[in-house]
Amino acid sequence: MSKIALVDDDRNILTSVSMTLEAEGFDVQTYNDGQAALDAFNKQMPDMAVLDIKMPRMDGMDLLQRLRQKSAMPVIFLTSKDDEIDEVLGLRMGADDYVKKPFSQRLLVERIRALLRRQDALDGIEIAETEETKIMVRGELSMDPLRHAVSWKGNDVSLTVTEFLLLQALAQRPGFVKSRDQLMDVAYDEQVYVDDRTIDSHIKRLRKKMRTADSDFAAIETLYGIGYRYNEE
Image (cartoon, rainbow, N blue to C red; front, side):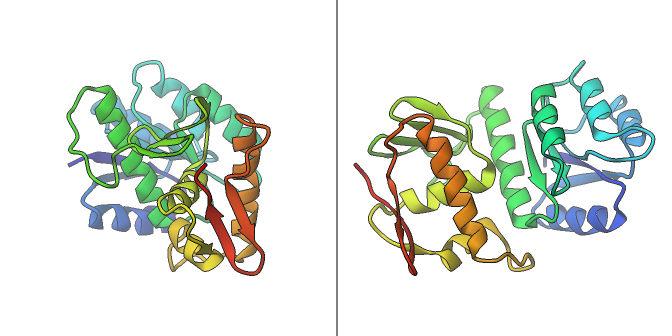
């Protein structure tokens, strides 16, 4: 059973997220500030940490910096809507990913599982191949869920978990249309309300990132008033 440390000064988040993670089979330890978490980590390190950035006594950035002096365990930051600078800094300091508040708990669980599988792969632990973990190749696109890795025409592309899940959903069945509602079901759970135009914004950023590997990237097609589809070259 993987041990997950959840560090946040919002008790509602600690309660609701820990209940969700425990229901998914994780052993969860909760802390309401960075110093309390660090004191516990000095005695026993968890398998992964989910950290808020702004906390009393010791914030998430300071905690991450101290962790990276002695551990390479996966770390996910929980960030507020307008914390883009903190997100970039956190990733540069060694965080593995970030999830914006308010967030989908299902999405957080998916990202935690993906990072734990990646860590197991790096540690040489054999992982059974399933439909969820095996590498998917669609034309010039390659997606590796274990390592959360994407390449297009041989070039690596860095995607957020939401972008990865949307691209994976579209590429699984090339030529078939996915409506915005169907794509929202992929990226968010029922407790999170988002406007359907949010999917348009994710697709726009996804296309922009894919174009860094190919100036003529056009694999994701928009069908106005209907949705999107992936066309395999």
